[in-house]
Length: 233
Image 1 (cartoon, one colour):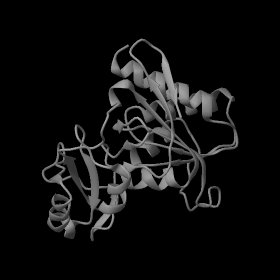
Image 2 (tube, rainbow, N blue to C red):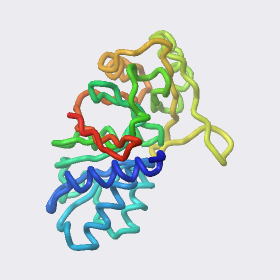
Image 3 (cartoon, rainbow, N blue to C red):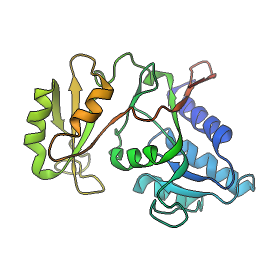
């Protein structure tokens, strides 16, 4: 299987295994998570799934849900009341303990809100996302208010991270998040302790959120090149 085929397999498998009628469901953002959305839409259209209330984690995910007429709500709506039964999302890196880095698509703030508001959490990925140490080969995104661009970068350097302001594509200047913030992409020369750094980075004034996800351990649905799925809890 190529990478696109693995993404489809992981997304569809997780949706079939986990999503049930009547759920309050968080749906993630990215090139693998979109296949979860597509499968949920298919199941609703077939009548195999009913009465779900969905919280999409980005404007892109909202538009993908709209294509399938999936019922969407804000997390503050009475239908969700600030809590979710399940969130399914992709990941940029996953270590051996299912801790992960997320935010390559710039939606880390709402993705983390959804993940930590969920009773159950699942990741969909392909085997290329497996790493020994998080934050080395793929940068850890850190969302900051614009006024903290340089001060936060200095504080991250003091923690051993090299921070680079994320530049936009097809637009002059930096990426602006859906909440009007900037993203610093941070690499650590040596493997970072994700539990420590998730807490420590968020102590920096001006940091809104970071891309380490360690406080809820997901079940992982990982597609292999040979067409099999590894389910790792």
